[in-house]
Length: 67
Image 1 (cartoon, helix red, strand yellow):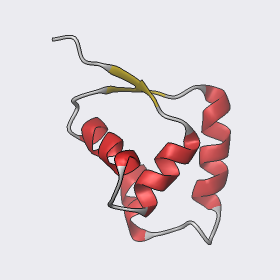
Image 2 (image 1 turned 90 degrees about the vertical axis):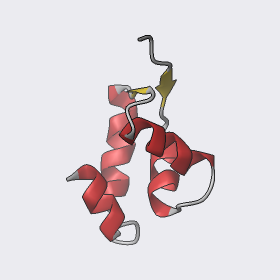
Image 3 (image 1 turned 180 degrees about the vertical axis):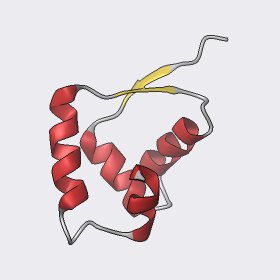
């Protein structure tokens, strides 16, 4: 089966983790359900890591997503 590929910008990932509403969260749900193939470049990974480590952005669901 050919799954669609989606490029996830760091802002989409952070927004999707911080809110259970909206398109960003829906994209993360599709990734979790393995209905799309997520694509993230190394350049995008740096801002994501920075946001992940920020105390103001840290939440239980973010820690669960990242493991």
